[in-house]
Length: 366
Image (cartoon, rainbow, N blue to C red):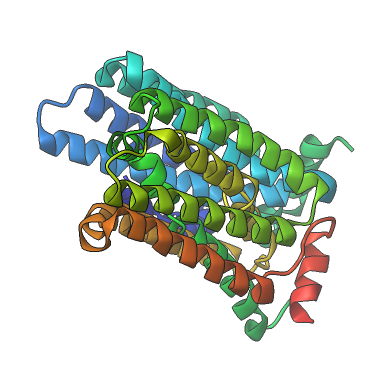
């Protein structure tokens, strides 16, 4: 799935520029529906792999186009919470999948996911095109009409390096922190840890925590500085991962760690909450805010490509790294990445809360 999302980045970036945001979102529904149908009726491993690849393509396309579209249609006073809602949607999807996966056969889960994709298609068919995209094509009248429906009522090339560095850093760190390893291997982690909480139940609790944490993150991004939330998120994640690694290290050196059997779940819950209030949603928001209009489509495509590349690498390397440096070593490695990321973000990321897109571009020029 992450591989499909990775491949979607460049193509979706081109499509956003060529045919518009709305048409790109409509197109994203087609591989999603096809992929889930393949998964639901798969009779071979090849069909399963193609289905996952197609659903990944749809996910990569959707996450790419949603951020710029939201930034372009939202007013400055609500752009933050609306942009952060993308992370909430992802968290809800994970929670629903975890919960349904415990009680429902996987083919029926694929059918339900396909129904969600159909609902997405019906929704995006009904919305309007981005006014900014229309203006870029000299369609002033249509842009004015669209803006009325929505609300009722030039930087140089050198500057592009800083916004691109900002988005690449935050989106790369979003995956390099190990979030995909934790969510994809949650059940296995709890089984391996010997936690006192049943593994499938613990995974559902992790998904629920991500939803609750992301809701808190949506509120936080409206009330607090985004840069501060990112730094706080990275540091708290590092502390949680250090504690999780310490548990596995103790487990490897002691015969009985039942007295702290609660620690794996507590550490992962703390990690998910910390991720949700900052790195889970703010990078998508920044992607829609810091890029100027003339590079937004292409730069967003590069950024999402980088994000899903990191997701693929984290997912594929988790098990080999466990064998190479132990489970504790893997989580400590992720903790170090979080701390280094916090230092990098301190110097690279600017504050965008409460500023219009034009003001953000001026700050980038400064």
